[in-house]
Picture 1 (cartoon, one colour):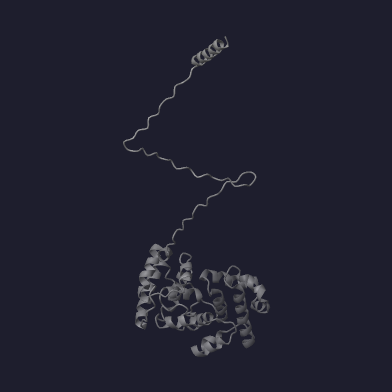
Picture 2 (cartoon, helix red, strand yellow; picture 1 turned 90 degrees about the horizontal axis):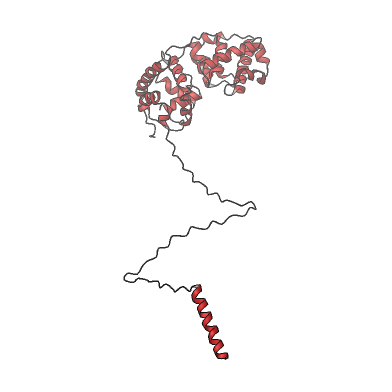
Length: 311
């Protein structure tokens, strides 16, 4: 693959527009309904990171159903809250982040209301959220985007792998740096929809394995739209190299007798061809056969000659 070419911000804007139109044809172009208070938005962000929107909604609902109230979640152990996120990635870290958010808000306000964040500027709100322990950049950016309406694009690890495959940044770019790159390429009005569509693509079971396999391979942004169309038409197999079939040699098994001794197999003797000498013929002379009559005559003659001599 060719190395990532340095592209201008205007080029990224054009590519992102074309990517958004292509993704809207394949996935739903409507944003899911979301209207939660600030504290609940922070908790939902912990559920949403590195998961689908449907999984996050289900986990957020289980979190409230499994405990009596938010204060019980705050005083419970991480292992007790971990069961809520069973089946999701890093359930222990999700439970720890939820607990840290609740503890920070309660210690600061002695309640579970955090609506004062909406009245602050982006810089002061960002600094305030940065004080929450174990709060990830995705959680912080998602809360600011949803509650303040700021021009921010929250990106997690799975979305970053997808964007690297599209050529938006070089391999190894952290999610926070990827969010800064997208900020100059996507309009504020399209930021929420663009993030939602990228999430749909990143977590599509047909293509998720491909993004993970090729996250260390640099891609060209200029071919992003063509590669995306090819991906939708031909699937992830179009971007994988075909594996060569290895022909296994058959092993020769030597037969053994009951005693365990190996039988020696005699090599087949090659057929010997007799060469006849040119011009010479070998003639076989048949020997005369002696019959029983000739044998008896010879015995009689010998006995008669003996009698004469005796006389």
